[in-house]
Image 1: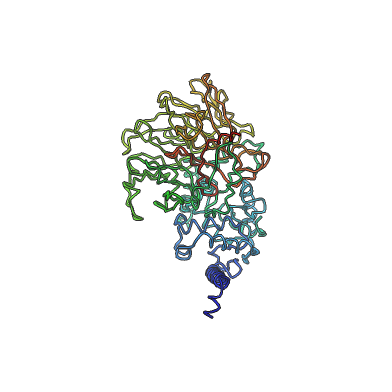
Image 2 (image 1 turned 60 degrees about the vertical axis):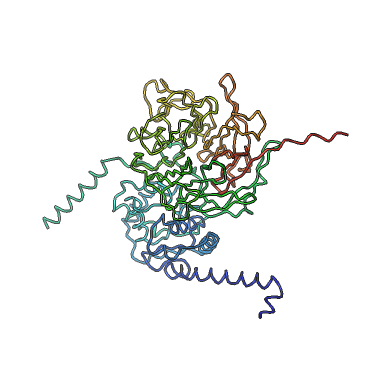
Length: 195
Length: 409
């Protein structure tokens, strides 16, 4: 084995390549443990990351690592993560197909008022008309309902930092009931992979 | 049951009362969008928060006039914006916005090394260097690092926040800061909206302070969002760039280059723009009366950022005391504008001639095909210019070499 390694730089390069792939796979497993093996989360509190725009996933991983978006769960996982690996992870999960994970009953009143609120707040201008997201802006269609609700409240109440001021300004003064309806409607919209 | 109803009624009342406190504003960048543009897909371009490897920065696509040369001087600085240089130019401190870091770039001759000297801050875009110390301005914090160049990675800054009286709104309150020839620290406070009557009078202005935050003085009002200024080498007057409002069409109101001949001038926001353009949304009688007019217009939505008057010995004499301005590039426009560094000279008649100097960041005149966005300019002790690129997190060095005389036969 030793002599083989000594024989050429090829073997060394291959070993380095192999170990980096293994390392990456470990990280992927770590993500999958909470976000679901295919990036679609079975845990209602944990967001789905499959089919999210690559740049959105990159930015969020960096914001968690830099402690600008604070999360006790995410910080230990991303601490020390190097940029090339952030990019690889984002690429991996952005390519997985997104699935709707809400199986509970559909509330027709919430669906109607959620649709109307989304239209009035013009969510579709940035998140796109089918809410599939683009660039730094996440896919909302098919995202977990309780996660959407919690994050929208955090934005509104100035508790989710990082990024810029657009979401806080958009949700300024929106009632809890409207946020609930928005989350219900968006979580049950047909998810498509972001463009 | 009665009690339950009472609670329900009380809750029902608290919500509208809170909502009445302040009507819900649309997102700041969205404000002032006319109904005709209601469905426009124009939105600010996404930045990039990961390092761009040096090999992926196409510096060979950048074009400069004959005799000038552009090199990639430093990279691996996601979000790089304003640069503050140490006296000997060996250290360059670089502010950022969303990634929350301040970098220190050390010039080691043939190469540069980078360390992060401050992080976890809310948009620490403002950096200023004086007498061995670094001032860092985040939106909500002012830190001073004494003896920064010699400090280790555990440098303990002095927190000067309370002395500077920072307002609470975040939008347009990321900063450019610099020391003037009077030794004062100049700090802008942008309007927290696209177009509005500012919520209180502490916005839309430029102030100066003593270095410790004392002696606050407002030197310009009616300034929408200035994130770049410098002092004319001869007159010592402050010249500042100012971003024009959005959602006023492709021809729009233009970004401005202004000067402060005497402190206290009013520069028009939100009522009057450019030379004589009343705002279509925020109206008052005689909106342009008493307004200090710009020296030059810098293009619609072009995002004129850093400005530097050239005083070095390296460039040809015609550049002496002219201004270089980085235009980061438009978003609120169907066709791109900016994405370059321009050279501005003011003639004896007071008219400005603006010429492209460094181009190639956007690869089409008709569409957004940009790979880089020039943000700020600094002059090195040898007279070369440094230009920061916020998109790929890099700094370029622009130098000049006199063409050799043709060999005699």
